[in-house]
Length: 391
Image (cartoon, rainbow, N blue to C red):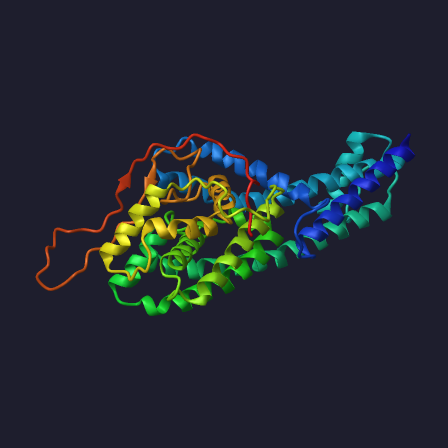
């Protein structure tokens, strides 16, 4: 019996160490034993989501959700420690002949680097192995943190720059309108190029290290996902409304953008249709698109097509990324921006970006900047993710 317990404990230790190596050392999408860490992260996220239900405003909800990632990192480390303690406890059964004494010895061996032994016949090999493995894990975890924070910093830099271009929360039509109003439409190709490179970086880092998804932006109304959606919608609108003058970078940005969303969805185990039909249904309604086009026309943005003429092309682009972005935005409780779907855990409706007033000498000083709430009736229909994906 003790031999069988020893074998079971050895298997637990090997599986745990293998999962740790895959998570901390080998960068790749989780697909095997390393998916246990995803379950830990998901449990922590659900706990904080439940706590965030107590909040009455989105800002306070975001404040409650902000510690999710650090707590998940600690929970991940505690999960590995607990698995190793259980494994070494079973491996010590041939010498301790007691689950409780084996558990105590495994705990002491793990956290004192095998330097202390309590009672019974010593098993130096297991004690030293337990201590050495834990030292290596702690060292790897310390080296792992700078990798995460470097990826987080690279992600947030471009998102922060987007606030003045697309508002907070970001919105695709607002991005185009603001560029027209201040006369910088010629910078849009560079913007699309930057976001194409950014999408490639985030696709690699966030599908390899899924815990990065739990790191929220420092400002509650900024979000990497909402920023990406705004840029993709802006690119799709420009391609649909201005087919002859739209920059080629817009097309490249779109393709890399929905490659990013689909890679993340795949890493989370969601089913994705990678070959959607351009006329498959989407949740965004034509009247919403038509209103946005009217806003662009009012701002003076040069349009080559009407909303009716451009809608099929815009629809054909958006079908590639809408479902994945909507599902992910709901999962991450992203800011409720226009055209970003509904949130199960946010009840305040959609928040539209407020355009700051232009300050000139002699202008009305009473005009202040604020972010108004626009309450919309949420769409309660639930759809399965995976009906559509990139073409």
